[in-house]
Amino acid sequence: MAAAKKGKHLRIADQRAARRFRKRNKR
Picture (cartoon, rainbow, N blue to C red):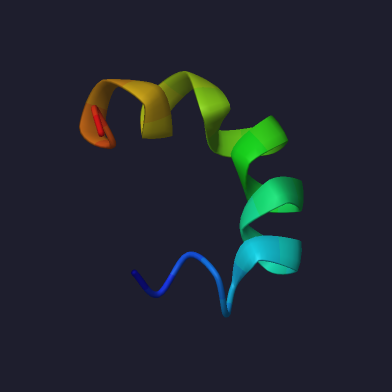
């Protein structure tokens, strides 16, 4: 799970791309 390493960066990008990332990242 590379999310642990990009956890900090993923959280910021998740809020911005949460709309398109939620459809792609269905995990």
